[in-house]
Length: 299
Image 1 (cartoon, rainbow, N blue to C red):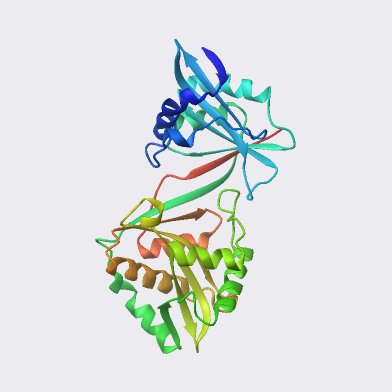
Image 2: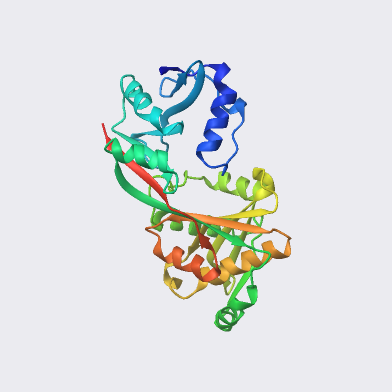
């Protein structure tokens, strides 16, 4: 087995290996793999008989863990240890830990991180909902009870006059939301969030006497190459109204809109630390997938 730096000629093979490593959950293209001039990034490949059989990519983790490097392995699991040892000999400087992210039903990565002394540090979940068979009527009684208290759900007009209130509640949710390195969102300025909503999302709010007390966002799949799908990105309820079913009703309202707009599938996810949102999504009928595990090792 030969371990060497990635070359442009490896792009098609590595794209195939990485797509296989995530079980086709995402499809990677050769043009996404290029030799990087960034000194904080590394990609190595393992080859046998002139054929690339595995790869490892090392890069800064991002806002969720700015002191960490992320490791991504693909290909034959038996090649992961030689790739890892070669990578350790030439790691970028200025980082204090390594993080690996994999799903619990992907044994080659799970076995490697456990054997290499990484710690199972955090877990996240994903969940899916079949909108073609989803019954919105189950949530009508709760919606009616909240309506009698003066609460009404509607799709939000991002060019309305109360954008500052929407953004302030969004920031409140970012501050309060349980998170781990994977589920920590990149901070969005008011302008960035407004632009994102206008281009590729639909937002919904619950109002009390005209004031926003809860909000939720859906990413529309056609903007991400997944027509017919929506993804729940963020939901927050004002602190004084938490624990009263507002998030359930608002997300049900958003999913009803998606169903009527002929979206067929909805996805969501988050950290297992966010028990309240896990309960909300269970009530809505989401079916959870195997957990995502974040493995950690200090340098």
